[in-house]
Length: 212
Ligand code: GAR
Image 1 (cartoon, helix red, strand yellow):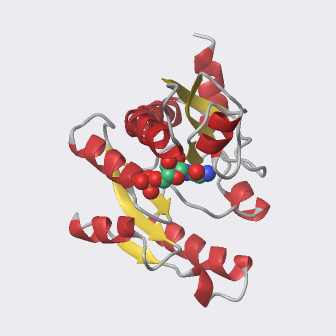
Image 2: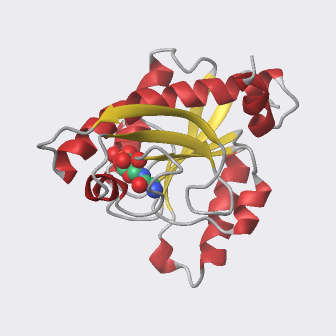
C-alpha cells in the first residue's frame, strides 16, 4: 500500500550518487510517476551524492557511521529519519553497508538495491572485476529486493551488458553504470505499480506480475 497520492522514496547512498541523480531525473521527467524523494541519507560525510541532493533542494541527511557506537545505533537513527519522512520505499544506491536482519524485517518488500552484476553471479565487492577475472563475455546489473543476505534478495529487473576484449574494470564499470541509470528508475516504477495495485507486499506483487 502507498498511503498518499505520491509514493515517498528514501535514497541511501555512500558515494558519488549517480544512481540517485538518475532516479531524481526520472521523477522530474515523469518516468517514475506519482513519486517524490523525501529523504537522501548518507553514512559518509564525503559522499558527493549528499551535496547533489542539497543542490536539488531535497532533504539530505548525513548519518555518519563513524559517529555511532554500533550498527544498531546507526540504524536506529536512520529508522528515525525514515519514520519521520513516512517513506513508502527505500532505495539503496551505492550504499556500501550491510543492513541488519532487524532493519530488513521492518521494511521487507520495501527496500531495493542495485548491484553491478547479473545476480546471482558475482555478489559482494568488486563484481565488475570478478566478471572480468572469470572471463565472462557479458555482465550487467540487477535491481533486487533486499533480504538478509548479501545481494541475495529476489530480483525485480536486470540488464545485460557486453564485455569487450579490451575492457578494464573502469571501462566495464562505466558501461554497466550507464545501464544502471536506465534500469533503476524502470525497476522503481514497476515496484511502485505493484505497491499501488496490490496487497501492500511489493515483493509478492512483482512475482505475481512476472507470470503475466
Ligand atoms: C553503482 O555501480 C552501484 O551498482 C554499486 O556502487 C555504484 C554506486 O555508484 N553498488 C554496489 O556495488 C552495492 N553492492 P553511484 O554512487 O554513482 O550510484
